[in-house]
Image (cartoon, rainbow, N blue to C red):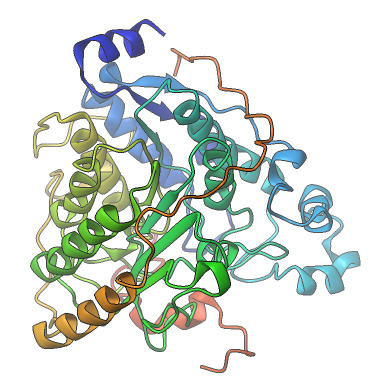
Length: 430
């Protein structure tokens, strides 16, 4: 704990980093786009750039069934705990009911995988609640599609919702920001009727998974206007993204004044992602992180999507450096997976020449609609805090280390976006 207290006394933000060395061993199956190995690649770069020296490094405590049923149904979590590749043939009706299949397969260690990434997010939120940390990083988290009683879009347990519920034990208002290319539907749905969480998602919309997130979707009941959606088209670049992200988040901060922020940094919004169709550079993506941190509010930063894994690790490493306010070289340091980054071995890479279909006039129209909705917010609502459940325990520091009724598959919905040269070529780093 010495490093945290030193940071506090020097006025620098106290930054925690959650990582479990086992995360890279979990495997969704051959040919599946989601590869937890990308978190291990990120960690290798964080270590070999020397960034870890400036972080309080923790191994997360595994989330318990009780932790996960704070949001998810007990029946669903019990199913995740019990299902295996050996017994799944006897549970076909339950697999369908809980939406396990091609997008969300049963694989060896599934439940432990959920416990691991979820544990980091809940423990990170607890660290913020206890005043131990100003910023927490958990790149294995950010699985924003999972629903109360079913898996969705490569996501099984919604660690974001569980982390926000933890933050709500202490903070009256929590802001959730999602820069993944896919709509943050699971988080929005969980908090659709409350004003204690404002969710904002910037995402591709139109014939794209999960099919939700129209600008007209604003929340309901007490939560009306507390769900903000900014639908986008293919090819958005850094300048266009900044032109909407900064004013929208700035206005929300002014009106809502959250006590804590959760930022989901899905890297499938980067150019060249094999399931994505945006044209953001790593610097453009990280500019969102930089702007959020300028708000000087305790912030939990999570991963999310991202399917060209050598670019995911580049992005999350650079964003770790941004959080630390450290300059790092464009020349990648040698590490266990150095060959993934050939032939250039650089941190940054150029955007593509794809057309930006988001013309300025249309972005301005959507921004005006969003601002119109935000004007309906009650400025900084006074909410009576309910009796708080007991907080989660913080971890010990680890110095070692388009029919709404038709289900859309994420891989099916995104398949037209896959880059032929990228898809399952077998190259390292794909």
